[in-house]
Length: 298
Image (tube, rainbow, N blue to C red):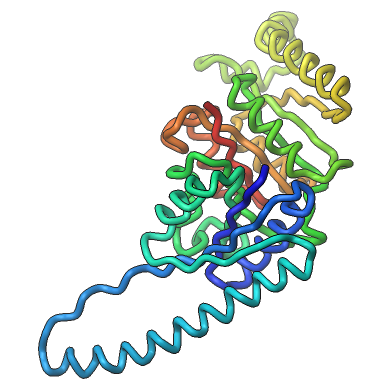
């Protein structure tokens, strides 16, 4: 990974994302481009009152531009002081589209942005930019959320359905996690529609046990293969097979066990319009209590 793009609006959540970005950039020895995108102002009508207002607005815009340049320069200086090669970019346009295009232009391996709010549900970075960016970008997107600590990810949860995109999510998560990070790979299963009562019966009948075995055997075998492959590669992971709805299981595990990163893959070039786990990835982005990595597969 040679280049990383960090989207910022100079807010506190964006600065938390900066801490994550610095840690990843140092680990990957990547160049960090810190980008601020200003939404274009609407054209004013030509009236005497509007002309006066336009003059006042022009003065304010000059002051605002100077402020933005100072804030951008300060964050670039912070990155350099942390040992990261960095540069700043200030553009005008629709934030998510502009950031996605910039990442493509720079051949960035990762886009990082922050979220507003404690859970990221009500307000995303610059409104809903983080969510739209995850849809539009053809690059991996890290939505940074929660306390950044030392900036590194120490406990990682990867959602899998064993597809190629899920493997890409695992590889991408391992790339940005701390070398000694604890990594769990989770696959979820459910009883077929119309047999919901079986989950209540549990192991009280032989038929229930047999059905559960039939439903989980293949996943268990694939999970064992993932564990073996990662152990051989020197990055051991723990595979978990959990009963329940995927989005619920993943977000609840992340909250209950203190994961600081959840990773999920997407299929093709349509981002969240086509998800490795159906609509699971979109739900995880909205509700996970920690950072979320959206890995775009091929």
